[in-house]
Length: 153
Image 1: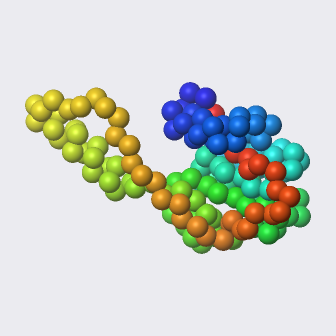
Image 2: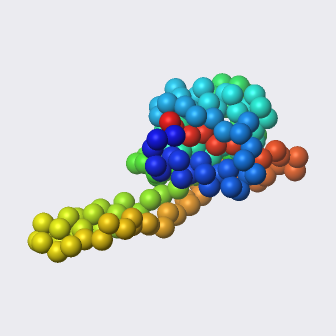
């Protein structure tokens, strides 16, 4: 994975799931990629999918429905980004929201400082995301295997 945010999400998932590679899918960053990866994970018995983007999550939901599964009763799906309209999907998508305004303000502040001749730190800025729980996630099933992840490559 050469996309730093995707690599970080994947590393964190592996650390929390004891590195279970069979529940990780890498795919193209698209609705179709989410559909294909979601189908493979469902075939392996996944009961929840944590997707690297909202688009991948919508593809996974589409596949689950085509296979006759109910989201969230049979399988939970989480996206990432809180893209516009995710509260309006069916079901509304549980997702991770990034603090875009704060990120933008920090970037502009750094740029203005640099243009103004002030030395700017080369340290990476990290921002706290927020889990936005909506209707695409439900209670864990009693005999549920580990969660799965769909990652864009």
